[in-house]
Image (cartoon, rainbow over all chains, first blue to last red; front, side, top):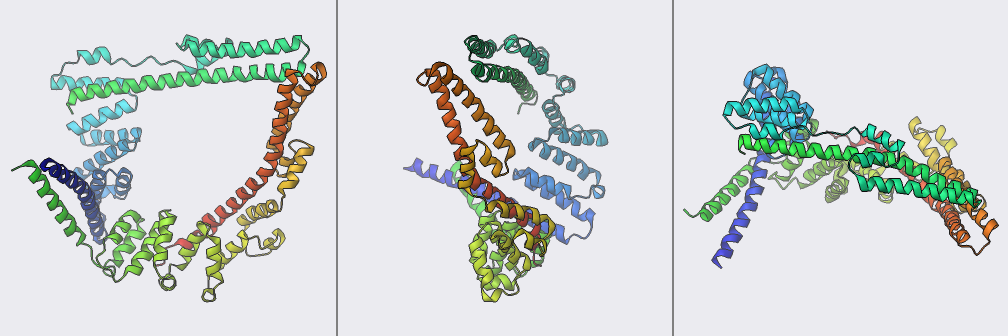
Amino acid sequence: MKSAIITFAIIVSTLTDLFAFSDSLMTRIILLEKQIMLAETDSLKAPLLMDKAIAYRQLQQYNDALFTLSRINFEQLNAGHKQTCYYEKAVDLYMVDAFSEALAEIRSLKYEFNASTEEVELLELILLLENGMWLEFKENYLLVANRQGKDTAAFISQFEPPRLFDPHRYKKLSGLVPGLGLMKSGYVKKGITSMSLQLLSAGFAAYNFYHGFYFTGVFSGLMPVRKYYRGGKTLTFSTIEKANADNLKAFKKLGYQHLQHLYGH
Amino acid sequence: MNPTCIKIASTFLLLLITLVSKAQFNSFASETQFIKHLTKEHLYKEKLFLLQHLSDTSTAVQINLEKGWTYHALGRQDSAAYYYQQAPYDSLLHYGFREDYLTLLFNMESLDQLRRLTSSSDMSNIADEITLSLDLMSLRYTPEEVLHSKVPDYLIKPYSNYYKFSKKSGLLAGAYSALLPGAGKLYLGRKQEGFNMLLANVVTGLQAYESYRRQGMLSPRFIVFGGAFTVFYVANIYGAVAGTRKIKKEYRKQLHHEISHYYLRDYSQYPY
């Protein structure tokens, strides 16, 4: 009975915490907006807008945070606020999957202010990884790891960019011999199925022509051959593209694992 | 101290903070300037939060109207209609929200309700645009009359299309398709669909004919291709009949969209 009461109390309190946290943050946002309305100059408004954007980020409403940041007159910010603004923009853009824009922001922060805090370094590494800039990622990673005195042997041996296939080349192969592109890229079953379908249709067309069923030979034999031939080429292209995307995803995951090892959180 | 006790104590503390924070918002009257500012800056989510936390209940009508307008601006039409309907109808006119409400009804395609409201005696000074929109949706004018009326140019084409296709008969389209596969679709102005349907029927028909000529009516080959031809032929007739209704709906939707987005948009402007 006692444990049931305690469990109930914990559930109620957790839910209340969640509600009160978001509600109080929203209240803070409204009060900040009120101050923004009353502020007479852009220089007074800028830090308030920054605080509001941070509150939105804490609420995980990243688009609202970005909108708030876009209202800031950047020229009116002091150096410290400018740095925060760059960082906040980069984080919010990262959270809405705008990786290249986020990288541009973090680079502006790095080169304009020579900022090299742990958060900035980590965010830059993540964004390099997300933007597929493997070499730069590797260089920066090794730089940080060496500075921290971490062992990099495992990273160097494992972090090799995946081998990506050229979908156009394999598509051409499938055009040359049906199913060949698929078989050569490792999808043997798919390749055989594609080849068989085309052979069967061609065989059906030949059988009909031989027996004098010319309309059937054209419409139910040759037309499907054409359709399967084109479909086979498209299938090869999309299969290779998907395989490349999967490889890149796995590679990014590996990069994140190494980052976790480096920063420990 | 027991961790559970700490957790429960923190909960009450947070609740207290929440209650105190709620008390930071005053009455509707004292927040009017701030509400206008939020509207001007398009901060609708914040405006709604503020409206929900105002401590004053004597101005519930104005709060509901503001909520209705804000939800409409956010594109949440059902919520907007709910809050507008919470306020007495006279108050809509009094506080300047009537045209936004009528536009909302038009956007929601509640045309019967809109027609009832606009035809009542106290609506004599209703905006011409809303009345005209209703007339267009109920096909009150012929395309020739529309050319000489106040209807803007960009509405003439969608109106003429809707008018023209509303007169088309599904039965006639079906009869054309029965006579010549695809002809029903041509009658409905869908040339590509009509050609495709004709091609499908010719392809299956020729194969069925070939099977019949060489192997007779009871051959498996004729049964397969004859069956396929029958399916395509029946589908061609059904497609023409059902397509008529669908096409009429599409043109109606297009006209409605044009009126909502380009003609009545200004009527959703904030009244203050």
